[in-house]
Image (tube, rainbow, N blue to C red; front, side):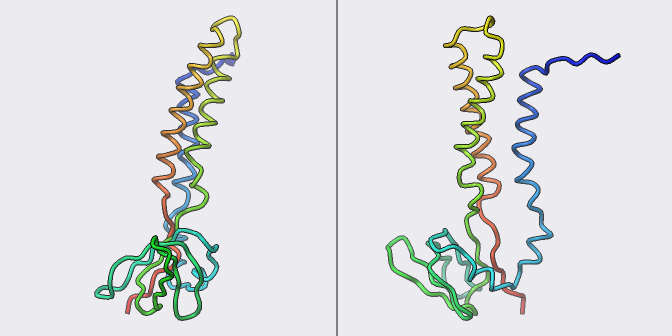
Length: 166
């Protein structure tokens, strides 16, 4: 007969790290290939989303800013200086946008880590004093913050459009 045992802190931490990093690996390359050349995805961007436009070779420098609008022939961004800048579609090699779903990953990781460690350590009230639970919750928050920053850095931007090779 198998006896169930309570998992230790190391086992629980490894499970949390494994499952928190898994979504960053699931956004595979096959979907990226299907996006190339689809200009309608540029028009569908939310106004204000952070976008980077990479020009064709010899067409100038990379431009980053907040998305304003796009039509069939161009995209308009509001750059850091507050001025709108329009780039013509034939001059564009690719357009990337900051992933919105990873924007709050550090905050979510910090809260989840604090809650996880607080519950894990504080589940047996006779073992540790409340200040110890708070200390471990702080450690969990720090670990969760680091994991959240890692998740955000792995999926910082997504390909919105890439021009077809001539």
